[in-house]
Image (tube, rainbow, N blue to C red):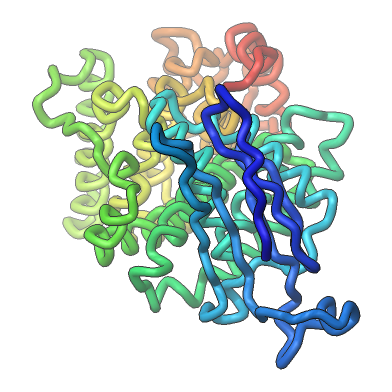
Length: 432
């Protein structure tokens, strides 16, 4: 491969023209990447064999570095010849995938956080790692396609289909790696976990593409969150050595002021209701542990305004027995999950991947509870603006004719949310 210096004076980055028999040059996020299009066939790739040229049988990516005062810096080569086949990028990038990659590096990378440092990592480090690890590349393409699907209703089906396809492939590739985390793949697995989390949260924006309820999506997200935190705990030292420290450095919220009065009072009221229900000691301990943990996480977004994903951390640390109760549609577990919906609604509802997720979760849970149990959701329904303040009768819920909300389905709840002034107005705004 031959590279010629094509530096432009005054430009922050040095641009090279790279020429090779089976190479292409991609410019993503303002930075050019060189990608050898080798199909990995042995002993000689078919592209080179057809052209009667020497084949390196490897995939090479070059990220051109900023120029220094003394001259230009050589490209950083990331050789993947020794990686297993499952870790290599798809050999034949197609126009659709290039469009999605371009969209990620020009638009999507800045929609996960307000932190300039993290934004730069999403723009530069994530694509670089994705060129090496196919599971991460699939995650990048999936979240990019999902963003396009939510922003372009007329193309929702096309981009949504691509999003699901890439997400399914990413999950298949990453699953076997969770039991074989190494210094070489820990960064890509960690970043993939973050992107998969954003994808799972954002999928509710395109209900036409799947049949899962918001609650089912949240339970799936909890399982993924536990997996990614397992990676963090087992390889944090490795991850920190790979320039990903800003992803892990969250500020503690233990020393923050007490909870807002209405949050503290609502949690205390739910705790008292749980006590009155006289469940077994073991069952009550599961409820109280989950609720106590959730109380703590109401402070997390306040301490970490640049890390909106922290609002989902409760899902990663809540007991698996509690998640099992959610899967079984246990009344109290669902009520506690609805309180988490309030946290999502107040902390991250303005991000495109979480828009109205909290409100839809509360409404989904409302539909699942019988009429005698819906009083447990008085506070969540009030906080998302769908139940009148002070109402204990679910029949006073806005938008339900005749005061009979129990006859309505989740679909009607979604319609209700869509036409609620406070929510529909926000939904019409541009995404971050």
